[in-house]
Image 1 (cartoon, rainbow, N blue to C red):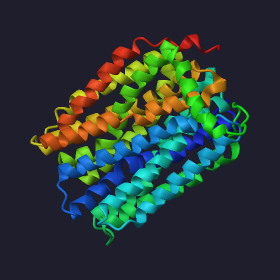
Image 2 (image 1 turned 180 degrees about the horizontal axis):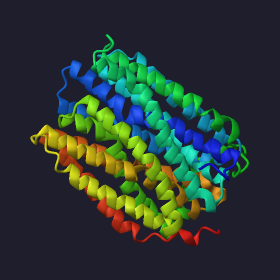
Image 3 (image 1 turned 135 degrees about the horizontal axis):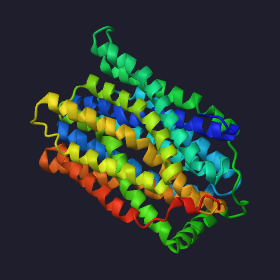
Image 4 (image 1 turned 90 degrees about the vertical axis):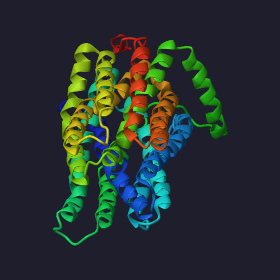
Length: 427
């Protein structure tokens, strides 16, 4: 699978393996379960804690989205991209480890530290994505990007196994720990995993494209944001793609961030949630690689369409998850949903990254990826916010899924207007 890849390409892929532990353990599972327990201890109603989790994710997304274009322009100068990457990676790692030391009853402090860790994660990912043009060429971008995402799921799955051992042993009464202690151990393991497997990226990946920084480059960076926006506005295919990307990414991110707490809100027990999400990681691994192969044969645009349609089906099934139904039925639906997510989640994200890399000028990849990440990091604002509001207004979290379904449908319509990526492969 790694045959023919350079040291830089392999090192870049290792960071997907490294940071996937955060996505799986912090963003998707353990943190939301830990917060839910902390909120319950504070006497907060379940539907309100679900909403608060959604709002905290919205805040983290807003901060990351605001930072994205600034980081994009500054990292466009030689020597700055790696410095910024290191800063945000270490910020995320340290904040993740710090989650283990927040007192159990301080639910609000948990959310603050989580937001900081999420900003560090998002900032590092933004710059990491922009490094794709520095480590490979157009013809290999789909392969390198999907391989990164695919191995990320595999690595995230292995890290998740290590993280849930304590939780499983506590649930089975094998060890005399509290769930809080098990969650805290998971946070420490995640931080260590992220740090250790980021070392190849820290050591081997260098900035290839950029401009020389001159006096006043910080101020000029803000000017460059406006210049980049004007340049991109002239390219209709970029605008169509970015709008569609924002909408379907919002749906994908909302489902990632809300899945665990959503499953818990309809009555699915913790052990089942952890098992389902673990299986999803290993389903996502081969399917992400498969998406890369399909893209090579049918084109990246067509393959992304497959992912969007899959997510529309997912939302339709999720609307059937009324908490008043029998638990066995809800559990079966959750399994179906999770497996379907596993088939599409990595592929649609990896190919979006490589598609955008193909259609932009390489010498301005940092600035363009800064704007790309505004759309990517702001993604989940609509979904998580409306999901939280619908939960509060109706007391029925599953009604919020309808909003997410609409996002995917609109994105599919707009995506029709983006060009076939194969026209850019030789540019």
